[in-house]
Amino acid sequence: MVKKQIATIALILSMSAILFSQEDYTKHQISVNASKFIVLFNEQVNNLDLSYRHSFADNQRLRLASSVDISTEEGDISDYEIRLGYDFDIKNSKRWSFYAGTDITYGQSISASSGRSTTKFGPYLLFGALFKIGNHFSLSTEPSLAVFRKTRLDNDSFDLDANSSWTEVKLLNIGQIKVGFHF
Image (tube, one colour):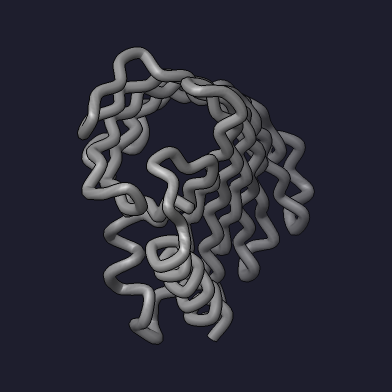
C-alpha cells in the first residue's frame, strides 16, 4: 500500500511540474527503476528502487538513492540500501547527457528465519547516459563498478567462523533503465 502511495505522489508531482513549470532547466529529478515501476502495482512485488538528484550547478548534482526489498513471507530475506553521492556532466546536448560520478552505499540484508544478517559498505563508481524525452521526462542508465566491504553476523550460531568479513568487487546496474521525472 505504501509503494502505491509513493508512486501516486511521484506521478502527481511530475504532472504538476508539466502543467505549471515554464523553465527548460529543472533542478530536481526523481527516478524509478523501470522494471520495478511497471510492476509497482502488482500486490506480490515488495521492492522499490528510488533515486533523487538535485542540481546545484549547471553540470553538477548531489544524489540520494534507496532500494528497499521487504519480504513478508516467513524465511525470506529483506534488503535495504541507501546511497549518497555526486555526479557531473561529461557531455551534454539537447537530447542526451553523459555523466560520471560516485556514490557511497550502506546496506543490509536480513534473513528472519536463520538470524543471519549481512552488512555492506563501499563506493560505487558510475557512468550514466540520460535521454531527455521532454523537459520533464527522461530515460537513463547507470552501469557501476562497486567495491563493498561486507560483514556477516550469524546470531543463532556458536561457530566463530560464522561471523566473517570480506571485500567484493562487482559490476552493477548493467542494462537497468530508469524512468526520470524532472521538476
